[in-house]
Length: 602
Ligand code: ATP
Ligand code: MG
Image 1 (spheres, protein in one colour):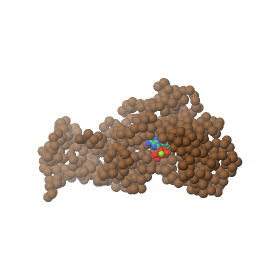
Image 2 (cartoon, rainbow, N blue to C red):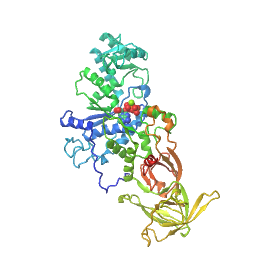
Image 3 (spheres, rainbow, N blue to C red):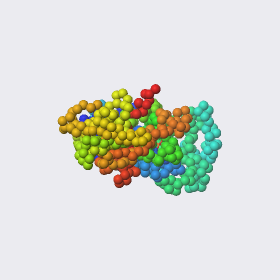
Image 4 (cartoon, protein in one colour):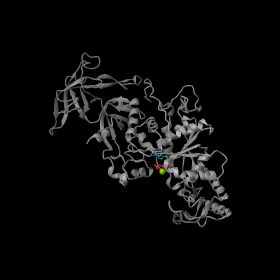
């Protein structure tokens, strides 16, 4: 159930505009393509992360805004690195991130327009989402490996055109022939094989006649090109390895550069959007497509700067290390920036999409402070989270003037700004828990919570005064004996009495225990790997603290998809490790940025 407040005005529409969308808009305006078609092409060699969310939101977002389509394509040309587990995780994560996008207030959503309408820039309806009203249907992935036959046939065509040859150089030899950026390479001695010989060898490579590394198919371009990617790059290599999708059908696999542009072409992609490191590959992308003299419109590649969030690591290779080294509990550890970890932590897809729109798309590589991401999460959860009372580090309070054995039900609102979220009852009785931090025996200046002889209001309940502090033999405070102003609850004679502090509480007899996992940033430094530093030296030792909290009884019925604000503390969501009668809550994020405060300290 979504608790997004229906009564508050929709936020100002965020209209994304960036150089890629401007370009797409221009193409739409000039009618360059019948339909805009993008794709998101992860390699299934790990779990998707926050950086991928930027790319997903860009590619699916453009399709949605311009009435186009976006394919999820598994770029699965490297069987030894890839696994079916990753395919499933990618499918789940992408669908989670884009599901229900139609409900967002992110773009303008004029009523009465059909989803397919493509609207020209300049019109107020320009950013009409392609999908309105109904959530996007589930996305099923395409597989580059489904095109292996076609891609093989294209390779044969290149050979026939004299633009590719079979090379017998070993990897090491090839390295020597390649030259350097400031020095031309040397042509392979196998470059001048006849077309017939090349076709024959290529067929025999496919048939499995040669071992790994014995031969490659290479493009015949220019060994003197200043762009090293154009120095007769490898298009196919022999790999006797089983593939998660094609099994043992192939022992010959296309390289990324060859498979990618052709997969784009096969799927009718118009805008092939990727990150900047692929800019140097673009001439090869174009060379392959143009050399084949293909009949349909060619896809074009556009590059943007990847998301580099601070205080974390977003490289699949590094994330695998964190998982394998057991720094975290798994790919979905809520401290990881993987989409599965982010989801488990309680972040909503809407918050991620809002973040992706907010950071924008540019060609400038820069570090994005993680506080920007955290702000988007707070913003979203503040609107949707149901308010609850829970005490993380309890201290007992006994109300000496409240009858023993009496319980009353006090009314509390579920959301202060959303009446439709309704109300609930909170049981109140003589013995309560309050947060240990909300009491100070020797209060610092401006301490407006409970202190000896002082008064504080219990939220939704009474004003209490602390009369006596009970300690154990070691001098630890174990109990506070207080009196309640029994006229001070809502509707009472002294309800309006002004008291500086309000604190949360739970009734001791009614509270339920819950395991609470207090997650925090995984790294203490903005750039964990700055100047080659070992990220293990800057792990935050406090990234996870597990405690048992006392919670109001309604939290026994907490729902997995629900988001809660434990008032005055943080946002929480139920973890999958919960069992009946044994709830486990994950702290998604604190109410305030505690890191900003720390950073401000000298
Ligand atoms: P990693 O380096 O984390 O392994 P990758 O680039 O190898 O990521 P792919 O699965 O090949 O991962 O990426 C799929 C798509 O996501 C590509 O188009 C890639 O450009 C894009 N992408 C990857 N990382 C980021 C990022 N940090 N920000 C934005 N887009 C990204
Ligand atoms: Mg990469």
